[in-house]
Image (cartoon, rainbow, N blue to C red; front, side, top):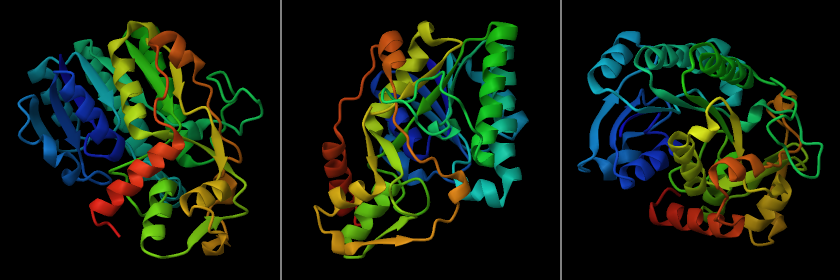
Length: 316
């Protein structure tokens, strides 16, 4: 197939690109490099199926129009977005433009050319987990940050194009994804940040009490889920979660990373407590039922792989 991948030079985008190329598709990647890095896709530069990398924005309607007209895409995996919660609080306009308006521009081109859209949303749209079985897709949402609000708005547009126009679309909500190629600074990469500080001999700082939990999904498992959502018609018009199905408190994660050395763990004031989700635990039963997808990499194994990668890439 001919496939367009937005945000393909980002952390998850890089792994999705790898999977799509391995599956034999012709791939076009667009990324404005505001969060992604060309180095993430350097190893694919000479791949015979990587048709083109475009440094450009999904806010550039003329660029999108040209791409969709010229290349007859079968699927658009739409991962391009602003992803930082604190940035969205500080500058909601940029996040809204990228995540909501940008998604609208992608949808309009997809509608004109009948291209399936796989929309990458986030677990941050959910309210805290209250059930032992975890958060399923019908769980209440809560836009606790402009980032979550922008994603929910975009989700509704994506699903409206399915219902109004019959356009094949799917909203996917992966939980907290981690692994090699994730940035080791900034928000969202708690595993990478902890591992980098561990290897550098630094202490690990935890926001708040550290009792907040996360469901941590290894990036190769996440990419497999993203790609499969594009291949299957069973998920068209649906919202689908993906996670490990196991949550861990940030305190326990720090202990796991430090192999029990609690002396290097410190608690600091939370930078955005109003947007914290206290408990995140994913119920992925819908993904298994519709796609046959389930995670394969344990948290312990995923942490080991990520630590090995950070060590050899000399990011410390």
